[in-house]
Image 1 (cartoon, rainbow, N blue to C red):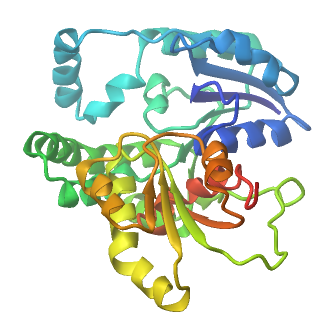
Image 2 (cartoon, rainbow, N blue to C red):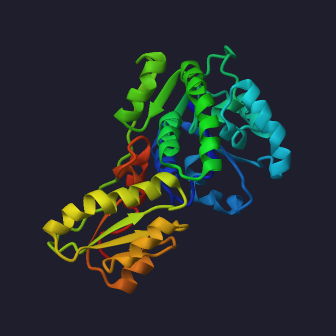
Image 3 (cartoon, one colour):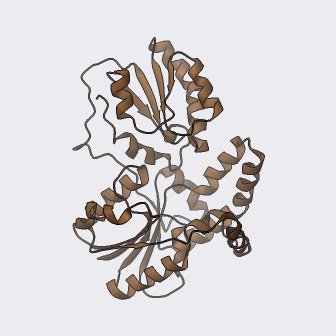
Length: 329
């Protein structure tokens, strides 16, 4: 088959959950299909990274997004609101992406166009009866995620923005799901949240996994003395997961394993997470990258978890990131 795959950023290097998933999908789909890959170029040297996935794609096209100041974004936000589109859709929707998709349709004659994000799908004409199958991946069901975030957010301004998005998201998601020929959820929980919008006919689950031929867990019997969380702590569900784990789950583990340490690895830890450093068995690194921390601290074995341990929908993607680190240095 001829495929056009549209994703937000070039999935190379595969250094985050979304990019790891897409990298491996390209690797496997390319065995029996011709793939044209279309991504935004955010000006971070994307062109230099193309050789890392060139073997899996017949065509790779980068599109520069329109970048505006916050003042100039106001008309776009108002237009989104009038169209009933969530505010965050403005980051994925652009004339340049629409034009690039149409150009690839003409040059590659695709059998299927896949959007790795429902917001990216706003760049395609789903009403066009051109016999091209259109599919969408829901990394998260955002109406459910934003509802959780709204409930735990303490900043009044951010809480108001979340509420505004919530008012639009559920109806917009329902329309989006109905338009696609197939919607792909990350987990049965996500699929269950999507199914009431459209029934079961065009929803399936394609979960993430770990290539056990590449990543092997060390079961040598070394005693686990550390549990680590890996993730951006500026992201509210990650922060909530850390606090929930520390308050509700870690005490249970400590009753079984004396002296167990809790390492929190990730940028932008807020004051509540920083305060956990008052516990002598908690380490808050405040930075990305696990390997140097492992070597510096000399931990022999480590159990890891990510936001999916608490948040649920879409969080299973964190398995991909966890698997990218060894259990032992």
